[in-house]
Image 1 (cartoon, rainbow, N blue to C red):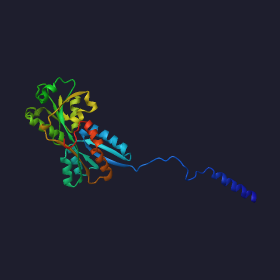
Image 2: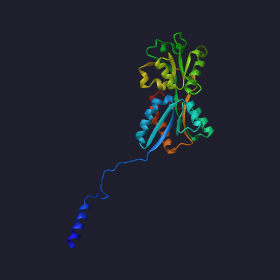
Image 3: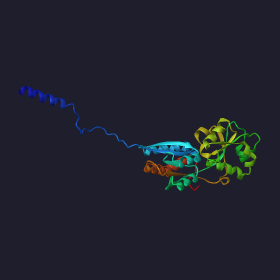
Image 4: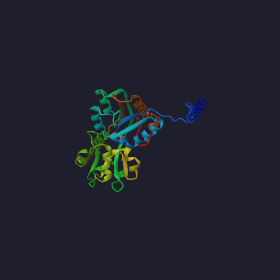
Length: 269
């Protein structure tokens, strides 16, 4: 009997040798509770915002950003019907202000983040001399199609229309206008050859994928209303704190440096 008990105790002791002490000093990895922000952003922000999101992720690895680009007017309509976005970056300040008036945006979370500019863009194979003739290229007989964003939905389209009226050429070229749903599609019309020339956002003209494909002439800023670009956190945002962190980054020195690199001016300029 004693022999049996001894063997049983020995087996139990040997089995215990395979167990890991609960306080063993193993390397520990840091994990974060995952958060997400759904962003509705104007098309002129496409390249700038991709870089912003990448840099923001380095500072806040726990926050996942999902961005959809489109025209500010279309986003306004969707958000008026409670589209599931958390924060809206508009190409103007008017749409965010309207959302606040409707109770769809948080008044205290309205912010200006940039000023946009527009200009004329042509492909490299175009013979038009932008530097010499400027706005006059639009009245050249060889120009059959002029692309602008649809003024009904896109602030950049309204700015283009205002510039054409400022130079008193709108009526003479109106029948040659082709309208993009947003400023990004306007660029595609010219890039693909569907239009001879386009009035587009400076932020897209300076993008790496267009710089070597065409030439750009910046329109005088006094020829169209200032494009004050603004954002707002939606009243139904899932994670208000995460949205605030993104807002703070975009308006910070680091965020503004990225926007400037992509052709935007800081608010107030």
